[in-house]
Image 1: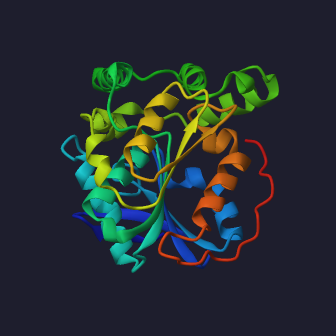
Image 2: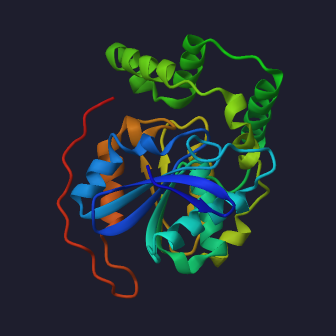
Length: 286
């Protein structure tokens, strides 16, 4: 269990496979193991070493406080890349993780050679602000939702109509959500971090090659917010993955992994060649 003191905290990470490194950054309240089922095997098969991280506030990394910022979390990833001697490397961020990676690209551009930003945003609109404030209010109230109710809410927010209409898949997802329910009070420090001002103008300074992925039925980070990020970053590519909600990388892993691998193995603008790879096969459904 690799744990290293980085940026003033004990940060837990895992390394899978060998080859050029890909650092993967999860979203609010999510542990690094979220990537293990689908993305880690596919990227390993494509010839990469995959580095997953438990962000600050996610055990066994140090407990979070209400005092840390997006800049702190970007500095955590920068410190990890430097600790591993991995720079410049490829980085993947999902949701809050995407926002963290965007700040990393601005603060420490020399550490990243290519980035994939999934279900990300560059500003908190009215709906995102309302959601974040509501979740902080719930965390501060001390009320704990029953796991089955939390699973039902998570399914409504995070899955596509296709999955909600597939009774067997939906039962499987509800079981997963119930078993992995997050106590919002335990991740209180992360909840307000998506309440960001409009950062889109700042993204014009990003020069790193970027792939931006939105998910067609995402109700948490709606696709138009993610497209705004792609439009703001010079030269960024945007792809919308159909038939999935906010957890698109778990709901439609084959499509997401194909987009990841095609982008991460493509030659860069400086002529750096792609690594040879094997196309990963279709992944099993959760």
